[in-house]
Length: 389
Ligand SMILES: Cc1cc2nc3c(=O)[nH]c(=O)nc-3n(C[C@H](O)[C@H](O)[C@H](O)COP(=O)(O)O)c2cc1C
Ligand SMILES: C=C(O[C@@H]1CC(C(=O)O)=C[C@@H](OP(=O)(O)O)[C@H]1O)C(=O)O
Image 1: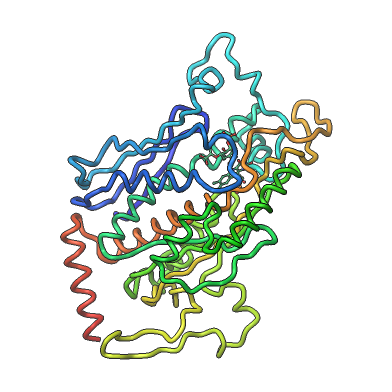
Image 2: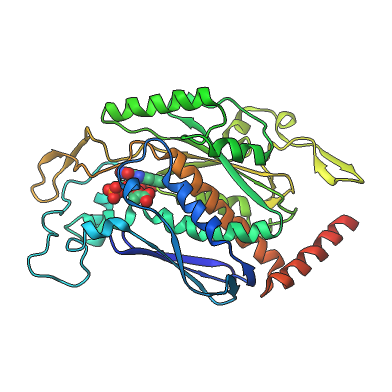
């Protein structure tokens, strides 16, 4: 059985819930580290007031005893502190004189799921769409990805990331070792390496906010320590680069994904793109460069995975765009809900976790066993085979 998960829950409901199926037994979980990842997702310049209300922590309610997985499905919940302000609007059973009409959404926001969801599900209160399409759900995905990340760490695989662009401001390229990159971006309010770029980006985000506008950007995720041969060329849905791209574009507001040099490959010659193959006793087969971003033929090359994702600007604008009232069919400006003006730094944390999840899934498909010990034996035997090749 391959690793899988589902999430449930609304942004202003009582909690988010996730169930992970297919984890091996005997994975020692570090709860502090799990909550640290949730905390990272809440940070970043440009977030709205909601992030001051929430203090995200994951509560594990199944599949773990005395800190270790048992092989049973792992169930996680992340409570919504804001729920206490929404109990009557979000009440699950019908209540007399509830507030749902007061908070009814009937002026769909361009760029959000409101109108499509209302038409598709035949819902006249677009709150029923908004509540689930909200990126609040990414808190559950980070909790799930944080477990995957711990599984990967058990086998020496490390995940990091950085913000590459916010609107017109681009971070200068860097070639830092992953540990240093993680340390430097962690200290930055926009998850970049250098202070000058941070200052420019924060001022730019403030300007967007002052204009009643929003802004998107580009983020990068790097995975190091991945063995050669995760994923497969033999079937379309086993290509790991494709699965990662799907996972990245599934993040709210993400509109594209690049692997390695990505779209730049369309304007360069083959001799400028492909990574030459080398061999040494010490390193075995390896590459002179990593423009492929760690993938050839849907399989990992053993070089670091380098993935970028582009996030569009936040749809909710304090100076709203034109829309149409679904009741009257009259033109109106879109409804203004409390909102972030830029969530690119937070989204870079989400991206790390959806990528970690896909790598962990492919890792278990290749080395799958029911316990950590069985997986380790499978991995070691494969690495010996690769070494002898
Ligand atoms: C971390 C994060 C925070 C977000 N915050 C907001 C927000 O405050 N307001 C908003 O309108 N959209 C926000 N979005 C984007 C919407 O969730 C997203 O645009 C919406 O679900 C529609 O989906 P689509 O953009 O993928 O088509 C956020 C996205 C992410 C990843
Ligand atoms: C709650 C989160 O992000 C939310 C994502 C979001 C959206 O429309 O996607 C809209 C806002 O919701 P609210 O109106 O409740 O403030 C964000 O705060 C979160 O990231 O945890």
